[in-house]
Image (cartoon, rainbow, N blue to C red; front, side, top):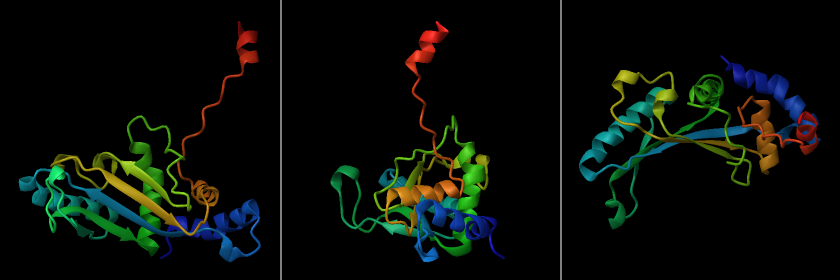
Length: 195
């Protein structure tokens, strides 16, 4: 079964973006490639193993796909990390998992962020990919609040086929991404008239 957001993308977003961006070929229209969800566990050495297991469990509950454990490549004394230690977890979502996760994130999870005024439109990497950091896993409806053992922060990276930030932002805007609106500058003439 085709996810709702993917159906919306094919039927509505593709023709609108092709016209908006002035693209001659439908294959030039930017599309989502994958979504990567990562977390880093920065606890003391004794707690790190349990924290990594918790991170794997939380990410699998949130994304519906089991993540892989990330191991340190080299030892760093200042961070008390030794080569080969588990330091985090990562999962790559593609196809239906990607569309369903993004639909839930846009419509349910993002509005759950405390004091939410929109996501920053400045988090593009210069090649049309977007990254957003989440400081607490409790905003996800899949997480049971009474079972949270420790707070975990997540990075969600939306990878697109766009070649520029403008095309990437146009794609995410068309999909309904809740970007923060720029604050309007108050017109000095209006303030004088009001006085």
